[in-house]
Image (cartoon, rainbow, N blue to C red; front, side, top):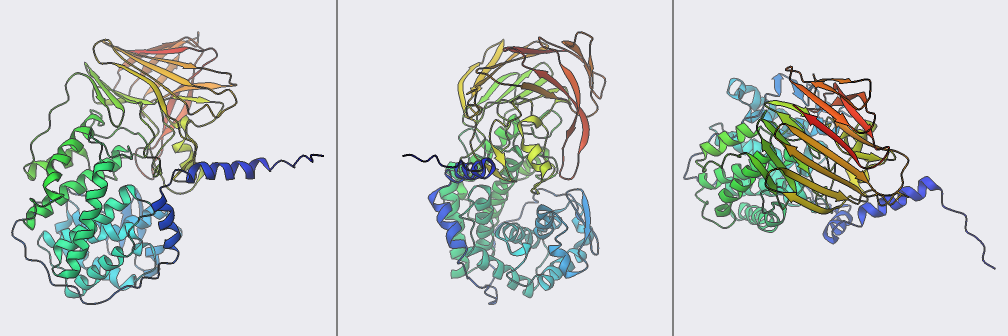
Length: 553
């Protein structure tokens, strides 16, 4: 006789299944590194710093950061001010983790007006050393260690001088990082680790520094070919992180020239790599100069494209080609840029990112953004927090992007602050590269639902119009296409519910029409960390498929 088993609790079973679908994508090296990390008992080595390596070249002024050190000891990060007068405030549990990380980066050393407070910056370095004994606290985690090493060295290379005890601390941090490379994460984190080791390895001299340099260069030699795609994109597919890593590449070009190593392996390939990365960033930048909001993206974290181009120019790198009118397909990262007249559209027919590190991914498959002139008109929701919270989950969710949500579910199972279980995959991608431009793609992210749904979307670009056609196969209870408007835009719905008008903040009028009754709802946009701006969204249900929504201007 077969005795039926009691079914697992639906919530517990769901969580276990979700976790399995998350961790199964990890690489063996990540799994092993996570296990070994628990047994890492490497102790800080306070030995005196090696001597400094003689340099032959000049240090070119690098990209500038916003000011964050306001006064002794008032600081501002992520649009939130705080104090560090007391040593405990470096690890204040009431602050978000990312805010505390920024506190330990020392980006203010590269601030545009930093020369006005060099004495205060020196005191800040001294205060950090006194208040943050190794190896505990946020400041000794590998990522902030990596960024701080680079910032201290760049400060020294600009003409300031680190005192001997500061150099001793810097060397101790490099030794600590050498034993705590983030093999369990990989991705952008391990590139940050590598950059710090290269900087420390060239800044100091001797066998120990040479070992740091070899390790950093070995990581770059192994990782750059995978992480930077042939079209120039960083493989995590966040324009914000792409800009951060582009700045890293430019800094390494700068450093290699300072120490006359620009002909060495890895270094000699960086200028060409920077060119590809600059071209990709140009394609993913709106006419207002800011990045498209795909995956984790916001203003104010990476330096602007304008500042990066100015830095590349100071490094005497060749200018990149200007984007002309037409359709530009970024074939490895799978984004599409269309410029026609004063319209610019960025279309997401991309995977969410690398399977083994999707922490900055959003459930935004088949979303898009639209600019007219210098104004953003249709925007994704943006990112204002990394803190584990309902807000973080909402910002990563499908409903915060300009695409279709089915039965209240996300196209990719984003969860926690940085986790993804089952992922949407693009299929049946077709692109018409000649006018009239047309892009069609499907994704299978909803096949896990009972209706085994496939979402197919087509964008058709006319002289002064954009039509978006959505079709969903299989059965479903609800399916909603959302078009989120930029702040300051208003939306009117005519009595038939199927047409209306959008008026932008600058007074531009856009008519819209669709074949299902639509509604205008309150929404929000998160252009920077710590900021939420009220806006509106046009929501159109797919009462019957297909649905076509057309915008004309």
